Length: 65
Ligand SMILES: [Zn+2]
Image (cartoon, rainbow, N blue to C red):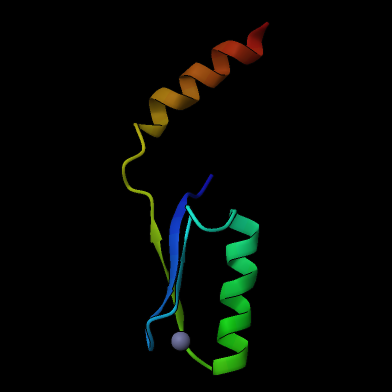
């Protein structure tokens, strides 16, 4: 699962963060901004996640039952 923390425009001050909108809404807003302005949208990924390996092992144990 990808965790996008924030979507922002590389050409102006436009941005939406996870505190303002849920992910699908941010994606839609980012697309709309790109389409209406012709600007490029980039995103900041959440890099503070714990190890994905440890998380996968935990999920596997739960699904065994
Ligand atoms: Zn822009």
